[in-house]
Image (cartoon, rainbow, N blue to C red):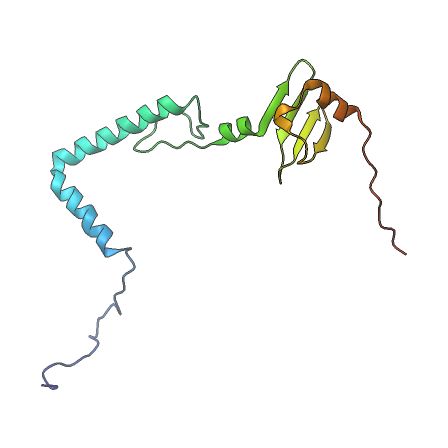
Length: 150
């Protein structure tokens, strides 16, 4: 039985063929989807995809940041840049020019112009009043002891 099969490399071989085209199952599903819809059905699916993407983009553009203005093709691209900015600001007292923003590690910043004061975790920034914020901004900064090199 061993002399029936022989392994050899043909003269004009392209070499070993490997699975470099992604997952085989994904290709089978994609081909099945295309063949099940046919030419006319695939055209209708493409048109519906573009229509749906533009509908979603139109409905969400006032709430999310749209990095590329105008109509889209089959997918709309949006990100949460606007939400991050809205979530960052806790209080915004325009008349006094003061705002309170979230910082890192549970701390908050009170900002007026170029002046920024950090308040710690022990202060409830949501319940902070304008008078309290002005008090924090008016208070002198605590001096830290610096280590002197000898």
